[in-house]
Image 1: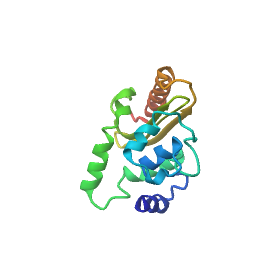
Image 2: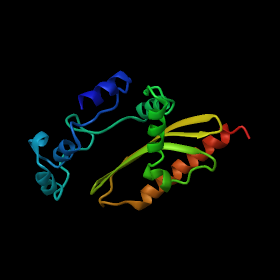
Image 3: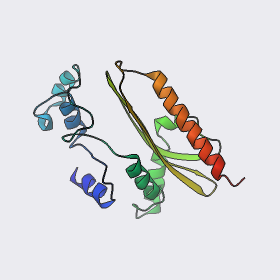
Image 4: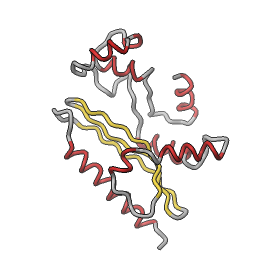
Length: 180
């Protein structure tokens, strides 16, 4: 985690926070006092109960700002963090596998590279997608994030509206920047 945090700091991503581990984050959110040392079996028992700590907190959290995400992807997708073309190619290839890319109708004729994230627990939800799209020789970098509360563990209506807003936004951006 120190290497990741050092990279985040060196890239100037001042609003990006990463937990000690996914296990520590989960254990903390579900109320474990010794969250850094829980076993997998203990985590499985914890997640049967309710979340007791807020996702966005000062102890164990996973968060970033849209500004940080755009800053990162506008440099990463152009190769600023890579020493070899092959590494950049693989980074871009992996970013085409983002599951949200397949759930959001993207404008025709774009190549999209993104990373998504989501949380769904009773009372709290998150969707995020950040990356870039390329059409012609034009790059556009984006970050879309929504955090909301709902008493259920699923909220498909809000997710559908969020994805539709992303699709509409990216289509408008492409239309306004296209040279055709």
